[in-house]
Image 1 (spheres, helix red, strand yellow):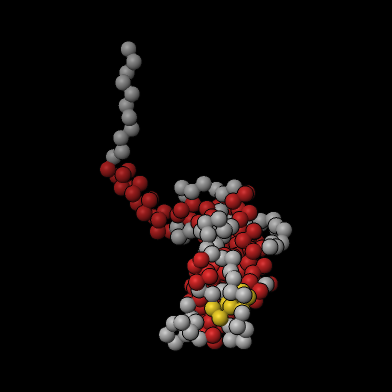
Image 2 (cartoon, one colour):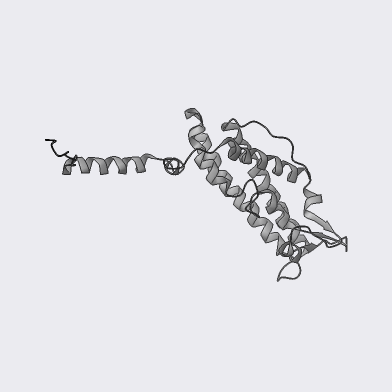
Length: 207
Protein backbone atom coordinates (compact mmCIF):
# COMPACT_ATOMS: atom_id res chain seq x y z
CA UNK A 1 0.00 0.00 0.00
CA UNK A 2 1.10 3.55 -0.74
CA UNK A 3 2.06 5.54 2.26
CA UNK A 4 0.36 8.91 2.63
CA UNK A 5 2.54 11.77 1.44
CA UNK A 6 3.80 13.96 4.20
CA UNK A 7 3.72 17.66 3.49
CA UNK A 8 6.69 19.61 4.77
CA UNK A 9 5.94 21.56 7.87
CA UNK A 10 7.84 24.63 8.89
CA UNK A 11 9.06 24.74 12.41
CA UNK A 12 8.86 27.90 14.41
CA UNK A 13 12.59 28.65 13.96
CA UNK A 14 12.36 28.23 10.19
CA UNK A 15 9.34 30.53 10.05
CA UNK A 16 11.27 33.15 11.97
CA UNK A 17 14.20 32.74 9.60
CA UNK A 18 11.97 33.19 6.55
CA UNK A 19 10.39 36.28 8.06
CA UNK A 20 13.82 37.65 8.88
CA UNK A 21 15.01 37.09 5.33
CA UNK A 22 11.95 38.89 3.93
CA UNK A 23 12.51 41.83 6.26
CA UNK A 24 16.17 41.97 5.24
CA UNK A 25 15.21 41.94 1.57
CA UNK A 26 12.84 44.87 2.02
CA UNK A 27 15.31 46.81 4.14
CA UNK A 28 18.18 46.44 1.70
CA UNK A 29 16.23 46.89 -1.54
CA UNK A 30 16.00 50.21 -3.30
CA UNK A 31 12.52 51.66 -3.99
CA UNK A 32 12.93 50.78 -7.66
CA UNK A 33 14.04 47.19 -7.19
CA UNK A 34 11.07 45.99 -5.13
CA UNK A 35 8.38 46.33 -7.86
CA UNK A 36 10.58 44.58 -10.39
CA UNK A 37 10.51 41.38 -8.35
CA UNK A 38 6.96 40.71 -9.46
CA UNK A 39 6.72 42.82 -12.64
CA UNK A 40 7.38 41.36 -16.04
CA UNK A 41 10.17 42.73 -18.18
CA UNK A 42 8.99 45.21 -20.84
CA UNK A 43 9.03 44.25 -24.50
CA UNK A 44 11.13 46.00 -27.13
CA UNK A 45 7.99 47.71 -28.37
CA UNK A 46 7.23 49.03 -24.90
CA UNK A 47 10.78 50.26 -24.41
CA UNK A 48 10.59 52.08 -27.73
CA UNK A 49 8.09 54.42 -26.10
CA UNK A 50 10.97 55.98 -24.17
CA UNK A 51 12.96 56.69 -27.32
CA UNK A 52 9.91 58.06 -29.10
CA UNK A 53 9.10 60.20 -26.07
CA UNK A 54 12.63 61.59 -26.09
CA UNK A 55 12.26 62.46 -29.76
CA UNK A 56 8.98 64.24 -29.06
CA UNK A 57 10.55 66.31 -26.28
CA UNK A 58 13.37 67.27 -28.67
CA UNK A 59 10.73 68.42 -31.13
CA UNK A 60 8.98 70.44 -28.44
CA UNK A 61 12.18 72.22 -27.40
CA UNK A 62 13.24 72.87 -30.99
CA UNK A 63 9.85 74.40 -31.79
CA UNK A 64 8.93 75.82 -28.40
CA UNK A 65 7.60 79.22 -29.49
CA UNK A 66 5.57 77.96 -32.43
CA UNK A 67 4.06 75.13 -30.38
CA UNK A 68 3.15 77.24 -27.36
CA UNK A 69 1.83 80.16 -29.41
CA UNK A 70 -1.54 80.00 -31.13
CA UNK A 71 -2.62 82.70 -33.56
CA UNK A 72 -6.20 83.61 -34.47
CA UNK A 73 -7.27 82.19 -31.13
CA UNK A 74 -7.58 78.64 -32.43
CA UNK A 75 -6.00 75.66 -30.70
CA UNK A 76 -5.99 72.02 -31.71
CA UNK A 77 -5.65 70.85 -28.14
CA UNK A 78 -9.34 70.54 -27.26
CA UNK A 79 -11.87 72.58 -25.31
CA UNK A 80 -9.88 72.70 -22.07
CA UNK A 81 -6.80 73.98 -23.87
CA UNK A 82 -8.85 76.53 -25.81
CA UNK A 83 -10.40 77.80 -22.59
CA UNK A 84 -6.96 78.43 -21.13
CA UNK A 85 -5.27 80.04 -24.12
CA UNK A 86 -3.67 83.29 -22.93
CA UNK A 87 -3.38 86.57 -24.84
CA UNK A 88 0.10 87.94 -25.55
CA UNK A 89 0.98 91.58 -25.02
CA UNK A 90 1.91 92.69 -28.53
CA UNK A 91 -0.26 90.57 -30.81
CA UNK A 92 -4.02 90.84 -30.41
CA UNK A 93 -4.60 87.78 -32.55
CA UNK A 94 -1.97 85.53 -31.00
CA UNK A 95 -2.17 83.71 -27.71
CA UNK A 96 -0.05 81.55 -25.47
CA UNK A 97 -1.22 77.98 -24.96
CA UNK A 98 0.99 76.56 -22.16
CA UNK A 99 -0.99 73.34 -21.81
CA UNK A 100 0.40 72.17 -25.14
CA UNK A 101 3.60 71.40 -23.25
CA UNK A 102 1.82 68.58 -21.44
CA UNK A 103 1.09 66.84 -24.76
CA UNK A 104 4.80 66.15 -25.31
CA UNK A 105 5.80 64.97 -21.83
CA UNK A 106 3.16 62.31 -21.17
CA UNK A 107 0.90 64.46 -19.02
CA UNK A 108 -2.03 64.93 -21.36
CA UNK A 109 -3.27 61.66 -22.82
CA UNK A 110 -3.08 57.95 -22.09
CA UNK A 111 -1.89 57.47 -25.68
CA UNK A 112 1.21 59.62 -25.18
CA UNK A 113 4.42 57.54 -25.38
CA UNK A 114 5.57 58.89 -22.02
CA UNK A 115 2.27 58.38 -20.19
CA UNK A 116 3.23 56.76 -16.86
CA UNK A 117 6.70 56.16 -18.28
CA UNK A 118 8.13 55.87 -14.77
CA UNK A 119 6.35 52.52 -14.35
CA UNK A 120 7.93 51.28 -17.57
CA UNK A 121 11.35 52.47 -16.37
CA UNK A 122 10.95 50.59 -13.08
CA UNK A 123 10.03 47.38 -14.88
CA UNK A 124 13.08 47.80 -17.12
CA UNK A 125 15.57 48.11 -14.26
CA UNK A 126 16.77 44.46 -14.43
CA UNK A 127 17.91 45.16 -18.00
CA UNK A 128 20.47 47.68 -16.76
CA UNK A 129 24.04 46.58 -16.14
CA UNK A 130 24.95 46.11 -12.47
CA UNK A 131 27.56 48.82 -12.64
CA UNK A 132 24.90 51.31 -13.82
CA UNK A 133 22.17 50.42 -11.32
CA UNK A 134 22.72 53.38 -9.01
CA UNK A 135 22.92 55.85 -11.88
CA UNK A 136 19.74 54.40 -13.36
CA UNK A 137 17.85 54.63 -10.08
CA UNK A 138 18.90 58.26 -9.66
CA UNK A 139 17.93 59.09 -13.26
CA UNK A 140 14.45 57.62 -12.83
CA UNK A 141 13.93 59.51 -9.58
CA UNK A 142 14.97 62.78 -11.21
CA UNK A 143 12.81 62.09 -14.26
CA UNK A 144 9.72 61.63 -12.09
CA UNK A 145 10.34 64.95 -10.33
CA UNK A 146 11.20 66.95 -13.45
CA UNK A 147 8.34 65.58 -15.54
CA UNK A 148 5.85 66.48 -12.82
CA UNK A 149 7.33 69.96 -12.42
CA UNK A 150 7.22 70.54 -16.19
CA UNK A 151 3.52 69.71 -16.21
CA UNK A 152 2.79 71.73 -13.07
CA UNK A 153 4.49 74.89 -14.33
CA UNK A 154 2.72 74.61 -17.70
CA UNK A 155 -0.60 74.34 -15.87
CA UNK A 156 0.32 77.26 -13.60
CA UNK A 157 1.22 79.36 -16.63
CA UNK A 158 -2.13 78.60 -18.24
CA UNK A 159 -3.90 80.18 -15.26
CA UNK A 160 -1.59 83.17 -14.87
CA UNK A 161 -3.44 85.57 -17.19
CA UNK A 162 -5.19 88.83 -16.43
CA UNK A 163 -8.43 86.90 -15.92
CA UNK A 164 -7.09 85.80 -12.53
CA UNK A 165 -5.96 87.81 -9.47
CA UNK A 166 -2.36 89.06 -9.79
CA UNK A 167 -2.23 87.60 -13.29
CA UNK A 168 -0.51 89.26 -16.23
CA UNK A 169 1.03 88.56 -19.58
CA UNK A 170 4.43 88.77 -17.92
CA UNK A 171 3.41 86.15 -15.37
CA UNK A 172 2.30 83.83 -18.15
CA UNK A 173 5.66 84.17 -19.87
CA UNK A 174 7.59 83.76 -16.61
CA UNK A 175 5.84 80.55 -15.62
CA UNK A 176 6.07 79.21 -19.16
CA UNK A 177 9.82 79.86 -19.09
CA UNK A 178 10.06 77.93 -15.82
CA UNK A 179 8.19 75.09 -17.47
CA UNK A 180 10.69 75.11 -20.33
CA UNK A 181 13.60 74.86 -17.88
CA UNK A 182 11.95 71.82 -16.28
CA UNK A 183 11.34 70.27 -19.71
CA UNK A 184 15.04 70.69 -20.54
CA UNK A 185 15.93 68.86 -17.33
CA UNK A 186 13.32 66.20 -18.13
CA UNK A 187 14.88 65.71 -21.53
CA UNK A 188 18.36 65.35 -20.02
CA UNK A 189 17.41 62.71 -17.47
CA UNK A 190 15.23 60.81 -19.98
CA UNK A 191 18.23 60.73 -22.29
CA UNK A 192 20.25 59.19 -19.46
CA UNK A 193 17.62 56.49 -18.94
CA UNK A 194 17.58 55.67 -22.66
CA UNK A 195 21.37 55.53 -22.73
CA UNK A 196 21.64 53.23 -19.70
CA UNK A 197 19.06 50.90 -21.23
CA UNK A 198 21.08 50.94 -24.46
CA UNK A 199 17.98 51.61 -26.53
CA UNK A 200 18.42 52.20 -30.27
CA UNK A 201 17.57 55.66 -31.60
CA UNK A 202 14.35 56.31 -33.46
CA UNK A 203 13.54 58.63 -36.34
CA UNK A 204 13.21 62.29 -35.47
CA UNK A 205 9.66 63.20 -34.54
CA UNK A 206 7.81 65.58 -36.83
CA UNK A 207 4.28 66.91 -37.17
